[in-house]
Image (cartoon, rainbow, N blue to C red; front, top):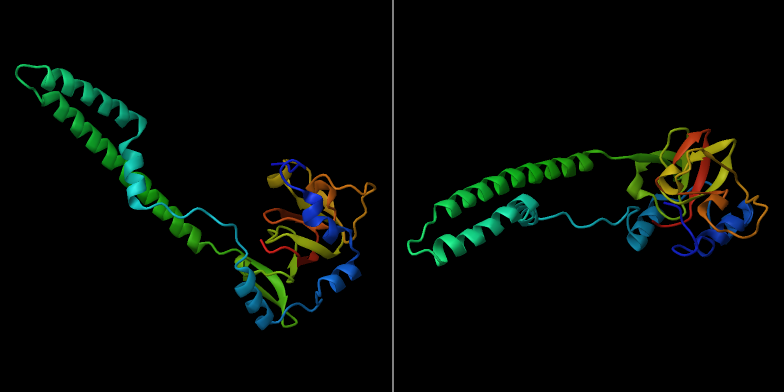
Length: 234
């Protein structure tokens, strides 16, 4: 999805971080090149929260049940049952429930089959999601360590290499021939070159493609190693 001025003001969000030189950026945001300490990282997690995208609350079992009960197929059958009740019971001299009972059995069977299938598959997907823990390398207490992506905090020094998933919105501090794939955000099929300094000929920032020294969460490194600083708490 390409960002435009109408939906997101890119320059307001990232313009200052991008336009500052590396030295000015480090000084302005009080960034230490040897990384945060463990206590600083803990304090920032408590202050800003985990580095993860907010998701909708998991559905309860009854949400799946009612979704299955009122599926398009069942809705048609329930409509037919209402018509049959009017013609075979309300208007009839001798009420007949046979057709209504058949439809009720069909609706019940359809609902239960769809409910258990959808409910169990979604529970399995949630468990699988919990088992898959993506990690990234950061510098903490002067040492390079591997941590879960959701533990990345504002001010972390992140070290990435080819194939790495970018764990947060980052400002590039060190790189050489760094290329990043941004197709998940912009739809661009070609990798985009990133550098330490902002070298754009135009001073105006219209889209994320203009930010040559900012990498975005969810994109990935195509080639070369690099070192970056988390400048946004996502």
